[in-house]
Length: 273
Image (cartoon, rainbow, N blue to C red):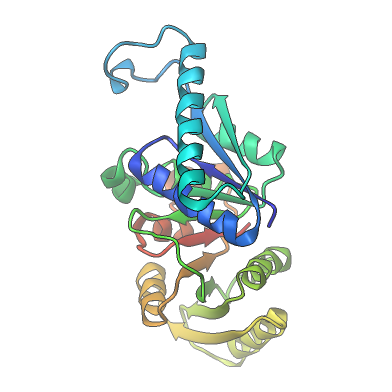
């Protein structure tokens, strides 16, 4: 892992996620990029409160000032051995963050699930949960309660009815090797556990290769409840999920399982793409 991008809207939760990203970058000997996106003309001017800024340049300069202050705070608290770059982009959050991730060739994007509106994020989602369907690099989503700790145990959710993309699974396993953790694979099976399912699970175990792991098949269809209960019982430090691509029309009406888990979980979640 060489480059980590942490997106912030300068809320307490988002800046806490930046602290998490800094500690992870330090552990992985990676560079850290702090990014803030702003849209000069708000959809509803009343949202910003107070006086309306005179220009986009004023907002850009203020963003840079806050990013650099955050960078100084991180260097003061965790040491100066991690290189930090501060980037401000004008535009809507999701495409702006995607652009930074692409141009910086980032290996990981870190975001807080709850930015400036934590209650609505849990009810309806947030920019971070929407990013799951838009990201082209692994996305680490942090709930407000998350604090940095060494990752020892990971729960990886896999749907045996729709076998994972081998390339995406390899990315997940690469992260597991970098973190030097044990991966507890959970397969939630909505239907009978027959020989076909057992054969698929053995194939998954074969693909896991040299990564220390366990594999559990549990019946049921309540993905969120089953996955989170399993994560808690295994004292997981991280949940990994591999979101399945949906077309734009379906995404308008159907919330993906990864988005739902990210919206409600109290365990950090890595969406691997």
